[in-house]
Image 1 (spheres, rainbow, N blue to C red):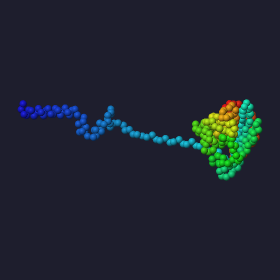
Image 2: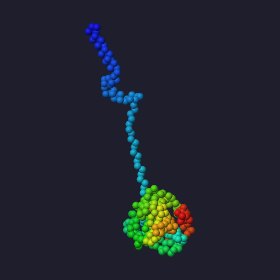
Image 3: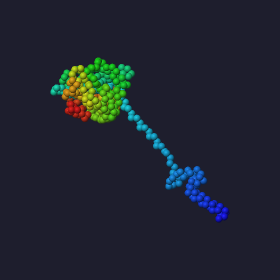
Image 4: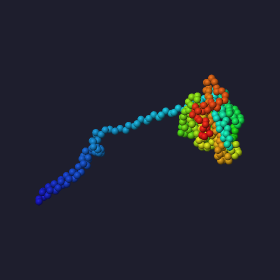
Length: 307
């Protein structure tokens, strides 16, 4: 083979090799020749050309407006002329003997002492009164902003270790499912509930004590405890006024529980607002009238001792 023929053979072989290599790497070479636009288009892998894909925008959902706050009920203003009365029935069982006293309680706002203080006159008496308990009378100066007593006549009996409000202070707001502290004791709250007292329907919060607590101790071997759930207080929604109470006190001897107990329940029976022309008369309610009022409120006095 001549020198010229040898050169043509080598050139042909080189061309064949370049063709084979070019065919094997044709995609990469095409991207290098076409430039960055084609590279960007080739970045999309899918069944449709990238330029025909719909535009997708991230649209944020509008933030919903928060619900308006639940308006808090306005507590009653302690003004001259407000008067309230409760009538009730008690059961005292001790060493096989029993007594059934009747209870009567009134509060009357009778004086305006200054711009934010009024005087509230209270009376408590028993009828029937089989054990000859003394009548009680007192007065307290109440702050009309807080609904709290700031001064009361007389001195507290040290034997009594717990008491409850006839009108909730403004910083005691019941909420269903939550707990409320009354004179240092924790109560579970449910409601609102509704009952008919005989003078119209009342919407109320029910409070029941969570724990046992000491109520009366005279320093001797006898004490009176309120077992868990044995104190029920109903406060009117909005006004915070006590409309019904049922408290059972179990006697303990030398710190051991006994079968002796004292239980009272009281229901609101009369109420006069400050602008009313009349006030509740301090007359004794008959047993028949009291039973009728309790029955109208859905309370069965016959099961008083059983609850």
